[in-house]
Structure formats: structure tokens, C-alpha cells
Amino acid sequence: MKLHHLASLLVLLLFTAGGGLAQTDMMDVVYLKSGTIVRGMIIEQVPNKSLRIETTDGNILVFTFEEIEKIAKERRSESPGNPARISVAHPDEKSAVTAGLLSVLLPGAGQYYIGETGVGLLHTGLFAGGIVLALTAGSRDFSRTESTSFGTSTTSGDEPTAWLYVGLGISGATLVWSVVDAVTRTNDYNRNLQSAQLDRKRGAQSEQRSVAWAVIPLPDGVAFGISVKL
Image (cartoon, rainbow, N blue to C red; front, side, top):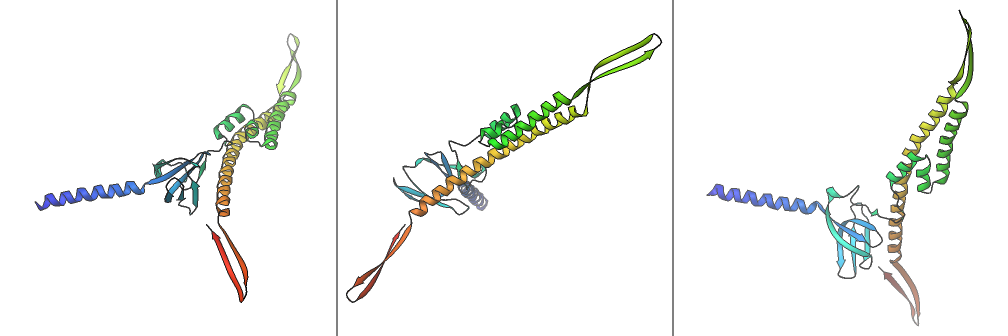
């Protein structure tokens, strides 16, 4: 009988621990109408007005319900990247895969895609210059005359020069460089968008908090007044 009760208690403890772990493995996810996705823990919610969410890196953000599209929960293991940070689905966000493929087709095209025109022109120019070098200086005419028992024979044609390999090397190296650079710059571009979005939100919320003071003269002295807006 005691073993039966002990087994029941162990099963209950296992279910309780499992439920607790499952609960701690979940996080709140706020989807905004602007495309922003905020992951963290909701610490305050005023029905039909606003909510306050805290990310694990210490940021506390406040959103009105007019800004929110939906609220959900998801497992931390399913969250991409750092689950505490804001991930921005910004209209100007670019695809690193697209940038890389464009640079495969034409070195520099991936840089044009994210607005890095100067870098793109450099890559395109190096790639095109290598091709031109290989085509114009990569071969030379030759003519050889050989003596045989039947007389002399002349052989003529084209033969490659060292410039052929130099030009192809420049073009090939530029192609690889352009693809890697396009992917890297696109990821940086998207991270800058996320940072700018977060900074704007922080700035908007800091403007909502203000402290003002005033000195009010009275017949028998002065009075100090302080106004705090949170």
C-alpha cells in the first residue's frame, strides 16, 4: 500500500515538474501592425489600453492596443536567434539569399540591391576588368617554322599568355568576394533596421516621461511645484 502511494506521489511530482518546465520554456510574443515582433515576458497589461513587455536583456517597452495585431506564446527553442531581442519585419528589409544570388549572376548586383552602389561598382568593375584583360591580353599569335626531310613547315595560331590566368583569377576572386560581401552587408543592413526601429520605440517612450517644476510666489514666501508625467 505504501509503495502504491509512493508511486502515485512520484507520478504527481513528475507531472508538476514537467508542467513547470514547459511553462518556463514559453515566452510571450507580441506582433505589431508595423511588422515588428517583440519576444519576452508581459509584465503588465491594461485591458483594451496597453501592455508592458520586458525582454531578457533588460529592455522594457510599452505598446498600445492600437499598435498590436496579436499576442501569442511560443517555445524559446522555436524562437529564431536571440529570443529576447526585437526582430523587425521591416518593409525595407532585404533577403541575404537574394543578394547572394544576384552577385552570382553579376558581381556587384547584390550590393546594388541593398543600395551600396559604390561597392557594387567596384565589384562589377573588377570583374569586368578581369574579363577584358583575359580577352585582350590572354592570347598571342605565334608562327613557327620547322625544317624536315621534306623541306620546311610553318605552324601558326594562338597561344595563351600569363595575362589570361591573371584576368581569370581577378574575375573569379571578385565573384567569390562579391557573393560573400553581399550576404554580409545585407545581414548588417537588416540589423541596422532593427536597431533603428528599437531606438525609435525607446525614444518615443522616453518622451512620454517628463518632469517639470515651477516656483510659485506667495504673499508670505514661495512654493515649489513638481509635475511628473509617466
